[in-house]
Image (cartoon, rainbow over all chains, first blue to last red; front, side, top):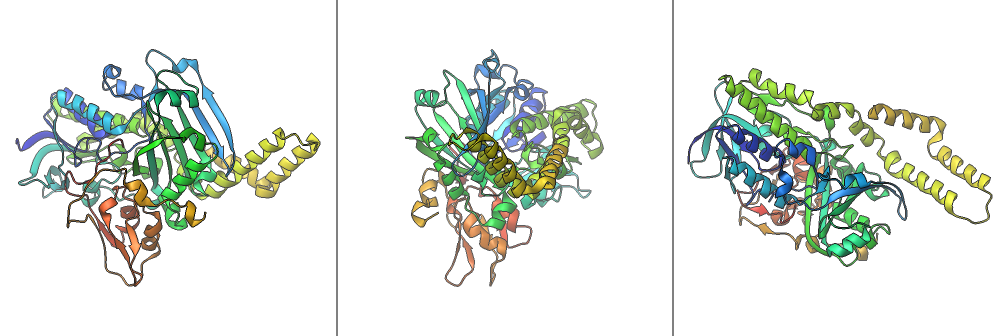
Length: 434
Length: 98
């Protein structure tokens, strides 16, 4: 084994593969370490792939990437125990030559993405756990120690794409362990159903797909959401809530998932399915304010490890890919100038990511995580119930005069939150959204 | 929810693929007399049901079914109540789909 590389990439997820691919494409010698048996063995995602950010790395990815279905319809459901009020968007425009979003299955996709990086010359070492960063007397990162015999490997720069539980960076004191209110715990199951049954149930054909995002009673007052994504011959269903809410409530994530699956609006969609996997993972939810220092002497941090996740739009893998690509491009530029991988030089990565959609989007929603957390009872229980009551009042025909029904709806809202509460909630959401 | 309608986590974990590293658990609970609130919470919120109370009330961990989500690490590692590391390369959960 060569013991020195231009760059070592820790992890073969979205961010790591994007970084390894880009670095190797630019001619750098790259070693990529993956602790799983294969890329994706430790990775979990819903999962939705956003084409634009992958096109910037592999423009013709559609030719051989393992894609499930392209999404033509999105359903947002506000849930009560027995009902949902939905908002739905479906457009023929999503049936385009190069679709915008796809469902994917991560362990398959990550293997494909990693193979692409290897074709460009990156060397992948699986079943290898990186134990710690090797630093010189001045704190500069100069390599990585692994759990393989004689496993210290040196490099000019280390790309930390180690995921939400990245231990190397936190052990070395480069960033802090995320706080319980900065991460969500999500659990998910893979339900296999015949493709033609999926197509009938979701009113789709061919490779079309549907996404359902569900908020409300399903999270039992915790800040969280349920989701259901259609794959080719399976449905991914899961639910995630903020870890501090789980800790305070003591609620069981798999009982929560079970209840979500049994919801009268969800249950028929899963009828007769065969479950083949149950997974759990953390999602960074801290947003802009939780993003740590992104670079230092001899290192950069990308993807989930850097908390780069847009909780409002449910985007993570595209921020991961983009940060991996930008970090690699910054490293390539520094190297092209024949300059050392110092913090000062690597600050180029931060500048590039600040100029990109990644930090602009996170900044836009910087107050949203705190709002969702402090107002979780109102936003996830009270309002879905009020909306549901209003809808039932509007739709049920029972001889009660409409004017009385409207009054009942208005007084229910007033009773629950009061006028000042309602206005205050609207202002708070608008401010955080701005 | 009645007990009859509750699902057992073992019935979910059986779908998964693991390579257990015998005798090398990657999570350990520090000795304690009375579990803290967060440590006790792990007995219900761990998605793999790895944490249980023993006969004398302390919290124990058996990490064979662990999905390496890191929830316990977030809640308990900073205070030193547990140590949490990755399983040896290649071991632990191996997601077929993820």
